[in-house]
Length: 375
Image 1 (cartoon, rainbow, N blue to C red):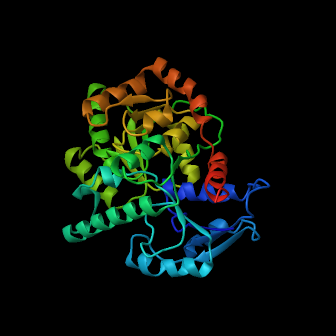
Image 2: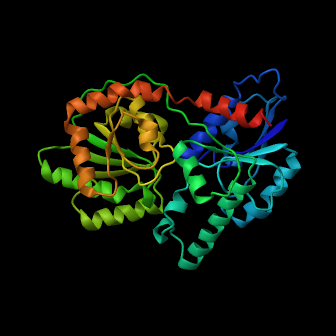
Image 3: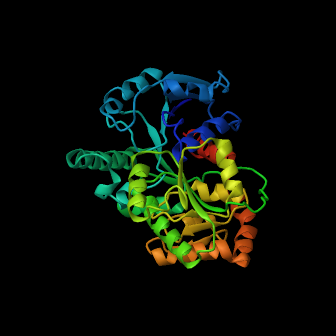
């Protein structure tokens, strides 16, 4: 059986890229059970990302270049032809952007329904007409993915329940296959001479970063002697630039000093940032899984998280929770996270139990066992 995997997003920063890289790397280590069909994989990749997969065994993996940007007309018209020419028996799309003209059998991983829950104008940097066009395209593509898939994979029960809520007539089977957390020894770091609270991720509106910044400044006003800074780490796209402009207008003296926007960093730099942080804040309005909080816990760093969407399901007792819609509540959560030693110890003591539930290798095995090998 030849399984095709759309790996064009493998090189991007953020959750989708990490999901793909871990899925594919761990598939290479799996041995199918005796009753499973013999399985080989065709990866559809950007030319610039081929180096990510040169370590894979050639008998099991074939790379096919598909230099086609996602969310484009070319994706709809050209990509299906490339897939069909490769002769795959089953296609795995790790996102909802499936070409409407593709007629072969496929499975889909739907990481979240954030754009369905928050379809506002501020989610796009495009002009109004193009925004409306892309909104319609998103709805069509998502509906196509949900109704035409042989199987849907979600990373949390929350996302599975949202699919059933928004698309109650869909009969496609859904399997929850959670993602992984880094396998590292919790780091014990000395107190930094320049302490900081850390956020890791993109700056899309649902990430709620402006409220986080306002809450942090409220915390600082209540404790002027505290030298803690807020460091935001993530790919510096238009949404981060917009956030920077808003911070500069509201807190002009804070930007670059009390609040620092780092942009994208290397894996080593990210590890160092996690290890040195007093805490990690993740007060998103909507998540499908939430990798950064798990990464923080793996490095022994306490987490402030939203009490909504999937985060309580994923993090369990290993986080301080807050209402992400309230600046006062977030500021109170920051105070608890940074100053309440008993709470910090309690949440970190729960971290090993939480982290033990998540494994990239188990994710790859469950995906193959429940979706690929099951036919």
